[in-house]
Image (tube, rainbow, N blue to C red):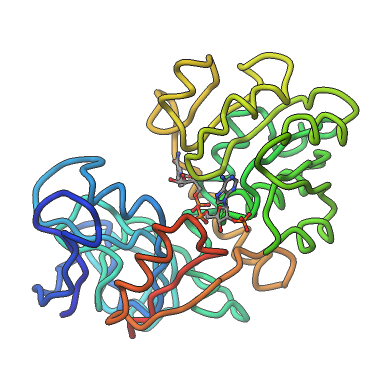
Length: 311
Ligand SMILES: NC(=O)c1ccc[n+]([C@@H]2O[C@H](COP(=O)([O-])OP(=O)(O)OC[C@H]3O[C@@H](n4cnc5c(N)ncnc54)[C@H](OP(=O)(O)O)[C@@H]3O)[C@@H](O)[C@H]2O)c1
């Protein structure tokens, strides 16, 4: 089968190759999926750079939709031919950007949810939900909170705005032009990122916000985020962990007790199928054009989810 993977760590554009590999065999608890769509994420390029170093070669492509092609031992409730989506494990010699992928965590793709839209959900929704939860923006416990989502033009931030609004928070979002109007239409107050961001946010909030989620790509903006809250501990970053440690900001990535929130994916998939939630797809690429997709993602200006079409 075709797979996109790396044999040595380094810059994604230098180390990734589209090559032939053995079709993987599902172990106990796993299914194998014939991949239709695979979402690309900044995490893919971090893996290439040595994040979670382990045996090589390693595959990339951490979220997929497709149809079940084989079912491992101890798997129940799913059959060959079912339409599914889910996060793809990042430790194997091949991952989601492949003709076939093994999944340990998977959910039915609801009727009405297209394969691209389903493949766009896992990383953004799981990360946004986990980040908001760590921050204190939780189901039935967010009413009355004013929450900043910095980087709401990114897929994680865009999902976080929708989840925080759904949980009853008042949301202020920073975003560029691509999604500013869409974010306003959802009910968020929106301002631009960059110089003066903290002042603009405080003006909109009438003072400091209660909590701030930094979902922006690393951009030296965490000090500015800190100026929007009362104390650095009222902010949590999903990206700039080095700055977080210097500033006393919370961060979320492999912290103790930091369990993945994949269990919310079916709920958000149904909302997406119903048209009341979305992780917008910016562009799709055939697998062979992975290099153009990678370049666009690495530019930090993806403008939504980038999807590889595989099957
Ligand atoms: N901790 C975790 O577990 C975890 C998991 C997943 C992702 N992450 C991290 O979360 C961050 C966001 O991921 P993502 O997938 O949402 O990224 P993404 O979709 O690739 O974000 C790109 C978008 O961010 C916006 N942006 C660019 N520069 C910005 C800046 N200086 N300030 C604010 N927004 C800016 C741009 O939109 P506009 O200009 O149109 O607004 C751009 O289209 C990444 O750093 C990623 O590594 C962490």
